Length: 270
Image (cartoon, rainbow, N blue to C red; front, side, top):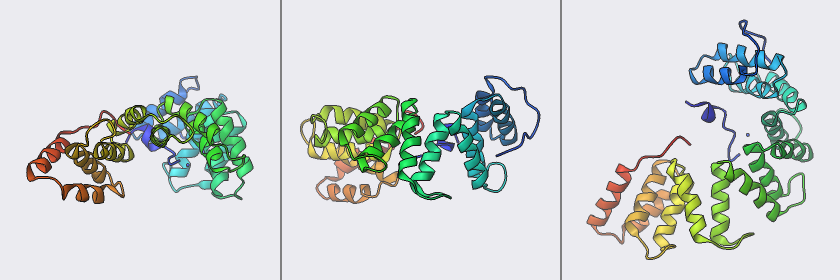
């Protein structure tokens, strides 16, 4: 399991030193290397060393380890303490996570105003998840006046940094023309980027575009293949869509579509 997947917050959401470790600016990176190797005690010590030296990002990782129970039983209060410390020090990852806790009322009173303050501070610092979540707050009108145009600005910035959810939302906006000029080619390009890493939403959307012939003639074989790939990744509508289009396909077309799906490989981890 990669560090990115382990600490992903989608859709979107304390510790004493375990052994002595030299504190340096590289301690966070060293901690992440240990996490990838599942060396949790060593990772915690490296993060603690960085935290002791004032590295705000280290507080986020220490908190996340406690929240996920990587150092024993899950300790929500300890995690929150580190998030608060990291946020106070200006750490955008800690700001974003603490903001989500306020947004959802996780172990504290739900507070949209405080959630907005923290999450959008993370966005201001350029944090990819903060940008996405700040866009969602503007989109939903939570802690701030509802503003679709402003939301799209944050989604676009997050998408530019590689956020899968933001890319999908921007692609859908290009499909519908809501808040942006309709651009099916741009939509397909963004969905292709998320589909390439195995994202089920992107795969399903490409199936829909192929079925409708968004870039030309409808292509049932291509649509079936994408629906098949999306269904395998548990997209809730993909199985039904695959069955519906298969009723109008020949046995040869179905075989060709299944061959495409069988031979398809993702370009990287989500």
